Length: 195
Image (cartoon, rainbow, N blue to C red):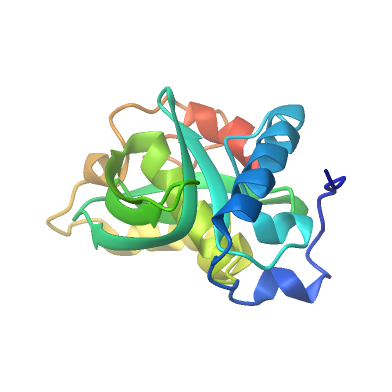
C-alpha cells in the first residue's frame, strides 16, 4: 500500500486530463486508499489526480450516499443550476461561487469492472461534478466566480423569468457570508475545505 499525500495547485497533474483505467484491481486499491485519506480530511469527495495519480478514479459523497467512480462520464445534466460556495484541498484557502447542475446522470464502472449508471441530485450531484472536473483537469478556479462577480450576475438577472429562488437548492441553509438572495449549501462548507 502506497502512502497517499494531497498535492496542490502548482503540480501540473491537476491540470491534465486523467488516463482511462484499464486495471480494475489496481483501481480498487487506489479507491481504498482515497477513501482513507478522504475520511482523514473530513471530505465529501476525492479524485486520484489530487494525490498525484493520473487515473480516472474518484469517490463522491452526499445525502447519505457514497459512490466509487471509475472512468465516469456525465451523460445528462438537469435544467436547474445551483450556485454554491466551493473550495478544494488542492487550492487551499480559495473559495469561489461555482454554478453546478442540481441533477446529473453519470455512467461509470465499479471496482469489479461492471458498467453502472446513477442519477444523482443535491449534494451528491454537486460532488460528482466537482470530482469529474478533477479527472478532466479542471479546478474550481476555472469554474467559479468571486463574490463581486456573483453580485454582478445576480443584478443582471433581476427581472428575468428565472427567480432567485430558482437559482438555489431548496435544501440549503442560509450562509452568513452569502450575497443577498443566495443561500450557501451547509454541507459545502465541509466540502470546500476537504475535496
